[in-house]
Length: 342
Ligand SMILES: [Zn+2]
Ligand SMILES: [Zn+2]
Image 1 (cartoon, rainbow, N blue to C red):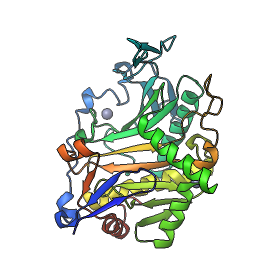
Image 2 (cartoon, helix red, strand yellow; image 1 turned 120 degrees about the vertical axis):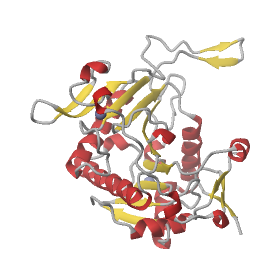
Image 3 (cartoon, rainbow, N blue to C red; image 1 turned 60 degrees about the vertical axis):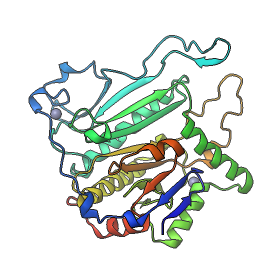
Image 4 (cartoon, rainbow, N blue to C red; image 1 turned 120 degrees about the horizontal axis):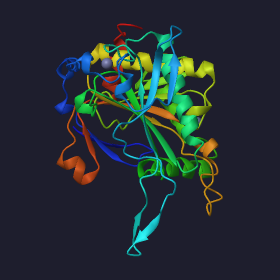
């Protein structure tokens, strides 16, 4: 019997339809074909093929370990003014002000976060933190999104391991919905809804995959997609960029293990991950109370979405998702598999 579920934060219905369920082996994906390294702009020696570098982590041998560059075809870009206005007195428009960066995670053409040594993944997470700090220092950037597309079906146009950062001049609607849910709950209870949810999940246990260095890897009650995985800090924090070096190391390990388990279970599936971080807390002119309780009510986290099912007409028409893999089963499968490189 299919079941409708709604989580406390997203206010969105999901249909869990296990009759349509398949076993993890039915979802297994082969590694997508790698691009030709001779033509790869992210490989060492090809630095001239990218726009000028913004940031690098040195490898100690004159080369780089992690590299950040502007996207060659940016969705948003720097501009001296926002130009916000009403078109015809009615429609909102503004210039495409923002930033669009690419984080080349490794000089290695073949390896991904799940297979790179932990010490290297720590450098990647440190780079994310540094770039987000810098982009959030610009008050025109209301929101900074870190995300990764892995595999062509997940939108990656190059196979060499990379992630992306986009800074937008507005707070995206999905982010705002989540922030409002967290703020409303805080006003009622004076507690963080995410901390409360995590506590409930840890007590129930059946959707917990693993606890790693003060991070919890789990599958949400209202998972939209098969093997959707979330990583939450077990400590309360609204802002990813405030992590201590110990917390960065813990997250690197949790991220590597979560992606390693996904790979161990499903081969090399296409996936996206996104960081759900707090918006830029700097108040805007005319909005002095802009997200005033943010540091108490919001809790940053990472969502990993394997792209194993198609979003089709029903999802488009309703905003509902149909998920054939109950998250309780997904958590169990993920608990049982050990990453190839733990
Ligand atoms: Zn390459
Ligand atoms: Zn919290």
